[in-house]
Length: 326
Image (cartoon, rainbow, N blue to C red; front, side):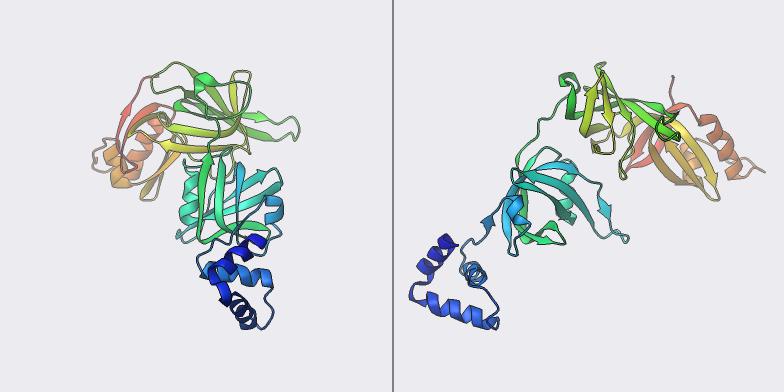
């Protein structure tokens, strides 16, 4: 506070004492001298934010700035009306740890702009409900990136890795030895690049809510995955981000179900909802006199289940489908 007071005295000169008294009186004498000085600094264009460690920041009643490492990014939460979203990040520095909440535009940064292991610098921060938020006019920026490995650079331990999705394998049901319950394991190949043979198997034991569906050819970022015994293990503390997707992809048809006047189709790990006419066009089915569209779709769709298909997308919507070998 001595430095702030010195700078404010220098800026206001002889008006300092009068301005300070007036500011405290404005709040009925309830404003502390420290708070009054901060308010006057802000009004006079003097940067009054303290840079704090997280251990001190959680006790602060005034705006502050800080730098911290991102330990984990939790699933993005969307409002029911779809008008906005938020995401929580677990962060830490040498003085402590905290939860940082990002809203809307800032929350979108976790889709490929910032990742677990990065160090970020935030300003305009404040504490609410035991969590750190960034106020209007505040900012967050990455000041140090976490090491990011390709498939060919992997070594044992936790890591962040990027690569292209290769073959997506069928889900595997197993009995958990600890609980005795049946669980499901998913897996796919992550490759150095499209068409390259250098790949590693990714085993998904427990996917957090919000983990996206993937297709062959998707370019992925995997955070906090464990590389051991030649495989990447993805668990509840891991995160998956689709950085880009091709306009064409291959995958196995997991299900094709006609419901009323619509069709639910799952290819690989992605779901599509089609109306009857779109589904008929996609499958190249012509109307047959005396046969209901739903009957035709059930027959053709049933034949496709388990088969590998190539799909061309237009605006994320299936526009063309062809049967692949294998």
